[in-house]
Amino acid sequence: MPRRMTARHRLLLALLWLAALALAGGALSARLQLSGDLRRFMPEPRTPAQKLLIDELGEGPGARLLLVAIGGEPPQTLAAQSEALRAALAGDARFALVANGGGDALEAIPPRLRPYRYLLSPGFDASAAALRAALDERVQDLASPAATLLEPLLPRDPTLETLKLAERWQPTHAPRRLHGVWFDRGGREALLAVQTRAAGFDPAGQAAALAAIRAAFERVRGGTRSRLDVTGPGAFAVEVGGRTQREAGVIGTLDSLLFALLLWLAYRSWKAPLLGALPLASGGLAGLAAVALLFEGVHGITVAFGFTLIGVAQDYPIHLFSHQRPGVSPWASARALWPTLGTGVASTCIAYATFLVSGVDGLRQLAVFTVAGLGTAALATRLLLPGLIDPAPRDTASLPWVQRLWRAAARGPRLRALPALALALAAAAV
Image 1 (cartoon, rainbow, N blue to C red):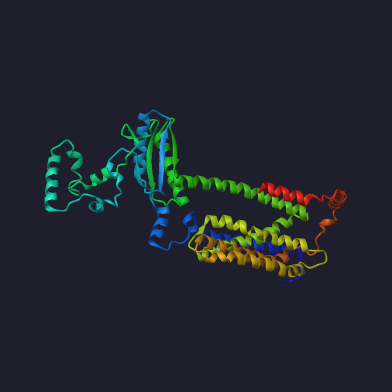
Image 2 (image 1 turned 90 degrees about the horizontal axis):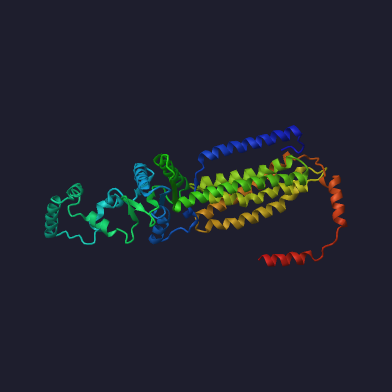
């Protein structure tokens, strides 16, 4: 790297750096797989019971259950819309179960459990006498008014163990029924229970399921004024995730603008915010690439919290800018600053490297992201950024308005009690 570079060379180097970042970002986006599974931030299970618990937190029916309420119209209209919505969602591959109290009650038993009905039934007797008695009862049932309901079951289940299981699993306090479907106690809202195939900690899958429910409801509501409410772990996750993303976008944009304004005010140069962002962007891409290479997927918390942590890297260019003096080569300033800067980076990386032995996959991702990001940002500040800095910078402290501000501050009173006041305020805040 030459020690003397013209303005054209510095611009070319900056463009090459930006192009490399763009290419790396494009290649990384094709490979990166974001995950929202919070189980990655839980300790690794060591026993079969712990493994079952962790699996059920994401894959269990409780985590995949959505409760749907339709209100705003007379009960008869809501019941018709509930039936139409159940029929629309029952054929959607994104849902494992859609129940509203109507239709065939046996549908509430998952198909994967039906082959085990004899093992699940508490009173099944496999003796010849019991089977003969059960078959004699079925002959009588075929002569009853319920024959049309029982006839499809008899070839597969002559002892009607499926019905026994359905009666046994019937809840003690079932929802109120109006017009053949579930309603709340007041009879103002029709209720449905929907079980998604996507895991409870799968934000994309849950968002797709919620979108399908709302789209189907818009089709069945027609011109009525009925409304739809959905709750459950998946609905909470999607709502919180969307709200967090919106707030983070607004806060991140404001922070970036204020930070760029602060750099411009401090160094009186539009180049300072742009050049200061290059090491930070390099560190972020390096951290994401390291996690993507070493793990199956990158957790959203790792990305969000990791970028917060490597925000420390934005100080590295500021140190270099602040140590730059007229007549001193930027390379010499970087070389003189490097022992102190490198020591700080190494100590920070050692602190976060301890997460690698935490036994939590999410914390290991965070450690890899932070160590790779901070190391890359520091090396970029040391090896690349000096080539972009003007070797003859303007001394901001010599500006007239800065001199006037400094003289005004020097004439001001000495607030000797300020440390004690700050300590008292801090104690009151705690």
